[in-house]
Length: 162
Image (cartoon, rainbow, N blue to C red; front, side, top):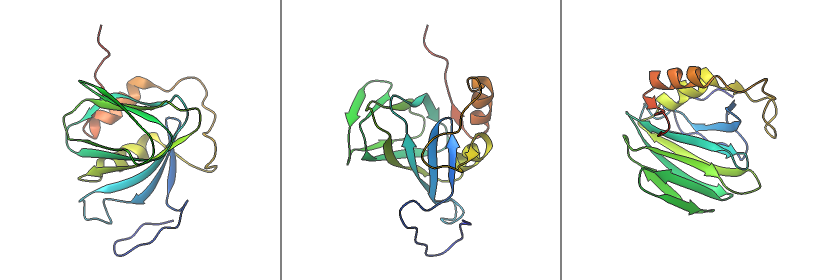
């Protein structure tokens, strides 16, 4: 489905979907549609999976939990939340999340301004043919490549502490 500028409507399950490192990301509104103001995605995270600590140098990020149980962490604390939980991360703050439940979790994620996440997902993601299970990966992901590509789009994955 091609996204365009103007008033739009997506029914449940609609939008362009990519598998990104085992998670399903579905575009709900793109930066092109909002003239760069923001982008919004629906994401499905498998049980006990998530995103390691990272920070965005150029955009703020928000998460709204729709289904499941997540832990969100930053430099100073960990917050656990289920459906209805909202987390806002201003740019420059180290953060990450994990689905701590035993079923797939679903969230809305927004980035302000939009665009960088979309280009990052496009470069490392894979078009979703099946929306229910991630494609089988041969071996583990090339983390060095993911870190290098993320840096192009203003996202930094600092090395773990010693």
